[in-house]
Figure 1 (cartoon, one colour):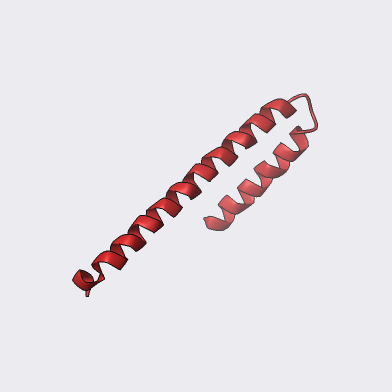
Figure 2: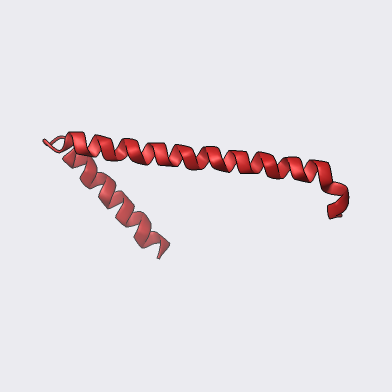
Length: 65
């Protein structure tokens, strides 16, 4: 299942690459920028969660052992 998803993502990306040279380029660019922003938000949130979790582990490690 994971290989199928990876193949589909590659296919979609290839299609978007081809379409970016057509009059649809502005739509493709907007879509890709939205994806980039969403991924950036997810990565930042993940880093914040990791930092909070590490802080909890550091402060309360005596309670966890």
